[in-house]
Length: 270
Image (cartoon, rainbow, N blue to C red; front, side):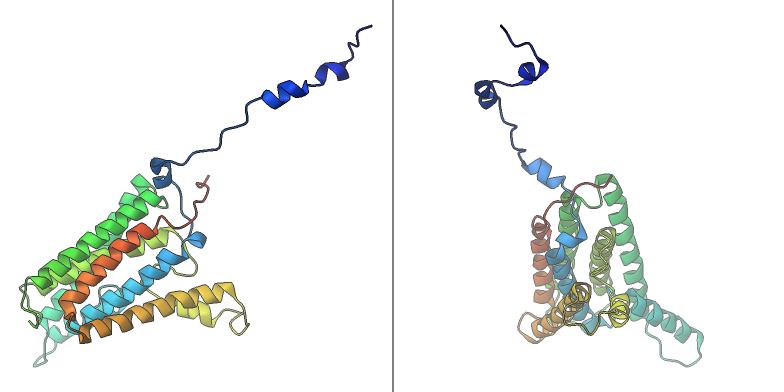
């Protein structure tokens, strides 16, 4: 007699089961890699490198001009003081520094704006945009280096060329700051301004504990910033001087563009 029970009908033939095709593993091509999303908890290496670059470029340019290209709070305070100097009778005025400081502030603002607009169209946290953004920053720094290389080696800053150098560098750091901010890293912040980071470390309840991942990552950003400044001072002391140092910074920024392929991909935000 034939067994027509439901249990026997639901049983699969072992031979047929072994012959059923297995699901194909998902393949990652270059296009899919470019469109992958990057989250801050996987991007410690490129963010730390950006902090290093901030210290490097700010040190080498401030040492020659007394104008910041990344730390815009200092520029705003100093620019306000410069404006007050023009209002006071018989007071020493600094028209070149005044111009360079306002140009740095405006260029940083415009760089941040352009970066934000581009991120909205391409995807703020996609590998593609982070790579393109870094390449554009490198191009701006190469432009600044090109201007310096076209001038005599020990020429002092003048109206003829130095405002353009500072404008390009500040625009680059503005783009860097905006792109980093979109990653919303609680440890590296914008990789440009670290005053809030120092405050967060000081107010961390785990400040004096032996192991504290949050405190340690914040410290990494500050240490990288300081190392970058130290390297910048060494480059100025060496034969590279300001011109060579700026070219090295531009090359470092181009290296950083490829660092965005290091972080592990994250699921796209819902």
